[in-house]
Image (cartoon, rainbow, N blue to C red; front, side):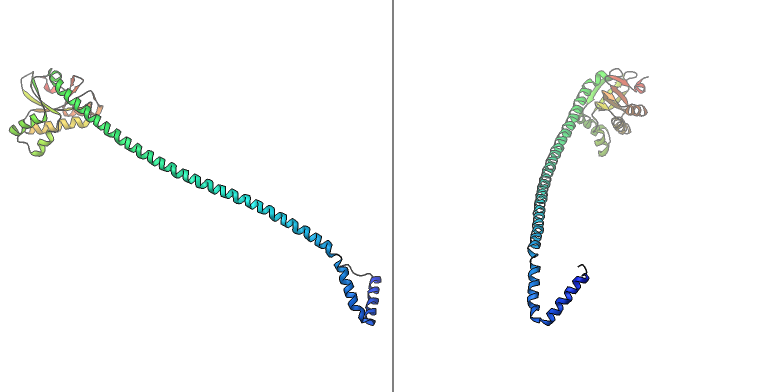
Length: 256
């Protein structure tokens, strides 16, 4: 509020003196002053209404924004739920595929094992059939024996323990023959395989050693279409006869 000027201050003093002399004028003057003050109320109300309207407009805009945010949040939540459901379904599909793949792999393993067994049986039959021709360069009077035939001989003539007998009978087949060089009778303990490995060589040698300890002049022999380098080396170390596609190796022990 601005300070009163000297002239205005004088007027106020005069009014106060008049009111002191005429106290009845105080109330009418107060009412008159109230009326004057009320004259500015409409303008203030208009300004207040404008402010309220602006606030209401801002509130409405904020409510619209909030609705849009809530709608976006709802859509995001729905998308997240759908993505979660899709991920669950994808996981179930992956597990089903994995399970089916596992079953297929097991079937393939069984088929491969069956094929390996079948190939082994075929190779054994073929080896027995070709044995006279393959070993005929070194031996004569060649005769092949399957497990049942050799078991009858072993039980009658050899004093093998049951464990040694069972081990020997794990061989693929046996060959009895006479050396062409001096007519000496010998036995071959044969392992037949498409691919000859170190274990084939060692099994044949070990089983032949069991028969040698029982009194037979027995030797290990392996027959196949291929041989690993390690198996070839092991056969040389153990003097195991190798028949590879009809050709003989390590035969020096049977030469005069």
